[in-house]
Length: 221
Image (cartoon, rainbow, N blue to C red; front, side, top):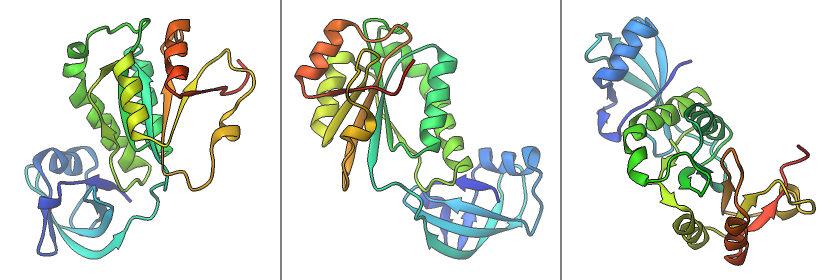
């Protein structure tokens, strides 16, 4: 069954008014017809089993058959602090981390990032948000992960520490601690910092650990 996120305002009086972009997808791409059932999500944790009552490439209309609460969202709110990398690698991380349950993404500018100014990322946000939405739909998520504004490394470190119970940094030189060693039960908010293609500099690792980030190994290279 196809899943679609819509704005909460699009759901009214047991009907779903699909916006033009989704209506075009329903008609031209998926070629869904009258009577087909789809799952509509409001990005607030609610799901609506919906039957298509009117199919038009500019404005589809659906009738809600059943409302339920999405129970698939992880209890742990995980923020992925992803260093800006080559476009295809960064977008792949956005997609896959969304599929496994990440709640938020913070693009980080490191000393070895190809992008060095936050403004350089502004034009990419609409595409990144589309990737997050589609990945959330494909994987049955109830909420689209939040995409935060990019930050320079030091600012990102401070933000992550202020918002989470535990902050981790994946580091290839760590030989002792693994994710299994540091993740505890009933953890509610955590952040994971991932480096760019060339890895973090020694200075960046020192800054992160000084601020309380725990270096962890993701396994043997």
